[in-house]
Length: 411
Image 1: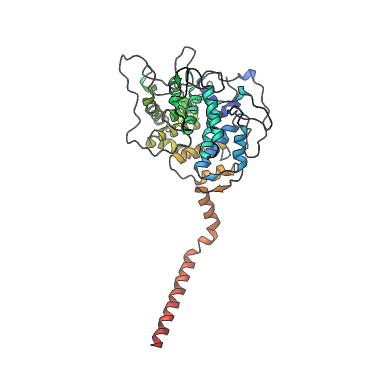
Image 2: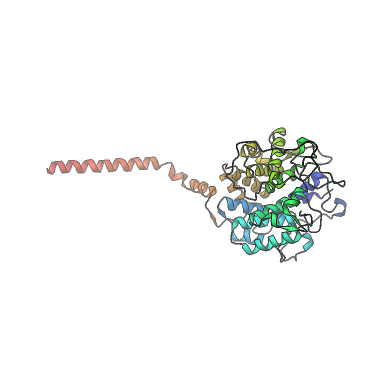
């Protein structure tokens, strides 16, 4: 069983959902001392396990909202990068890098954030090289280097490659590329019809794959060829196409060309069955709504050209936003909700303002938050503009009439 603190990292929460052990057991893990929140970091919670994750999501969402973040916010993220190009979940100021604690999830989202911000090509290139160096021989990525791969980490790594314009088909180890690695975790024609297209977090000890909500949702964005922020304008009229299987056909990995649609079909069906959201199933606990998985499912469906199948989830997340974001105080959740709303072309002004308020004051704001701020500044004068315009028109008309009368008298 994983430590509760590690649930801040998406891949580790998926490991718990799958019942896999991707980190130290609770009994072997000392309770960490809460780290002080550094200047420049979004959110006020302990950043030990999610500092880079939440900062990267926040900066990506704000860049998409045309907000130029403070130098301290960007500098904190770039300062977390190790010399070999990887990022840990969090590194205290002055602490040395430990290659064993660098992780693919933090590195993948940091790369996407820096691409979205622009102007950080050297750091992006080093991050991509780290991902290439830590790819497993089967084409997948682990959470920490040297561990078995998993669907979430592989999906996030593929997202980063797409963002950095590195073709996943050309990123390979021992003849197995990134798409091959992702295919290891996707359920195909050997699975029951209602499970086909889903992703497992990892195979069980026997090698069998079981559908996992968060793994399916996060991997779907990579399967659909996307990255953060999702800004696709592709729209398909039909629903996602379920995997086509022939009776008696030998079991084979899902072809890359069919992967995104198959994952979308599975997720769309799960969202309908779950009243527009996915469910978190933790051993020994009652099922609860999974906001994070639902958000990634919506992003994957929108990326694959199926915003209509994502619409119910987007609306549900909007209604549940206050609960998910803890009243707008959870930086990672607020950023994730903003990314979903942006992808769905919803009203982002309020969310942008809430996220901006969780970090240092931005250098510039050109998006919805700027419009909102301008409106507030002008509220006092704006309500008088109709009167002012009317007076100007009346005065102008009076002057014109007076001039015409004088001219008539002179004639």
